[in-house]
Image (tube, rainbow, N blue to C red; front, side, top):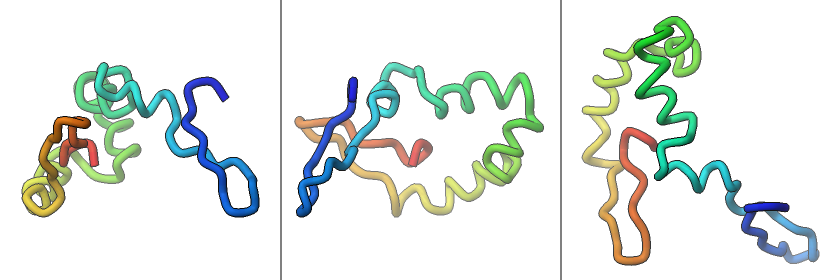
Length: 85
């Protein structure tokens, strides 16, 4: 279980808490980075298929809910941005 934080359930079985590739999101190596930087420019049909909406539709929805879903950064960790949520 390389790079995976593990928790134990009540019955003793292991439960994965976070995958290592999700932890690399701050480095810009994840799917969300690919969506914002590459897919929207290179292949708009694949972008639409992945999100099931066009970029203007996504931006409209993000603007509508951003205030409600964004969090503040703390000294312990950076908050996930509204765009990535």
